[in-house]
Length: 234
Figure 1 (tube, one colour):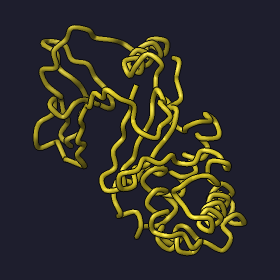
Figure 2 (cartoon, rainbow, N blue to C red):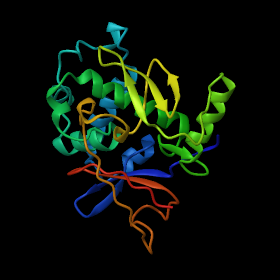
Figure 3 (spheres, rainbow, N blue to C red):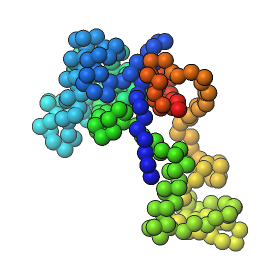
C-alpha cells in the first residue's frame, strides 16, 4: 500500500485556526504560546522524548505511574491553554478524565505522536493514497498470503456461543465456520451481548473554499478543544 502524509495538523482556538508546531522553528513562530511558555513547552517535550518507562534514570524523580497528568503539566509550569492543545491536538484525548489519572498513558500517546512526527515530517498522520478502501484490500491480500479463507456471498444467520457465553463460530445456512474470535458489526450479535463503550458523531462538509490559515493544504487535520473533531479536506 502507498500512504500519504497529511500536510499539517491544526487546532482551533476560538475563531482562529493555528498550526500545531511540527518543528522547533515552527514552535518558535507559533501563536499558540507566548515566549516564556514556548521555553517551558520545549523543556516538557525534551523530557517526554527522553523518558523511557523501563529506565528509571530517565524519569528525573517523576513517577508517572503515580503522578497525574495535571501534576506533570504543573511541574513544568505549563498554562491551561497549553495543556489543552497538547492533550487534545497531540495526544487526541477526547475529554478531561485523563488529567486526574496517572500521566504514564497520556505521555505514551505523546511519545507516539513525536516519534511519528520524526518519521513522516509535516504531520504524524498518514492515510492511504487511494482512499480508506485500500485498508481492507491490503488486509485481504495479507490474509490470503498467510492461509486465510474467504467465504464470499454468505449471509450471517447466527453467531454461535458456547455454554460460557464465548463466541466460537458463525453459521451461514447449513455451513458453520469455527473461530477462536469473532469480530463483527454489533447488528450481528444478540442485544444482551452488546455493551456500548462510546459514541462517535460524524458529519461530512463540502466546502467551496480552502480552510483559512492552512496554506491551501490538500489535506489537514483540525482539532477543536471543546469537542474534539478530526477533519480532512482534499
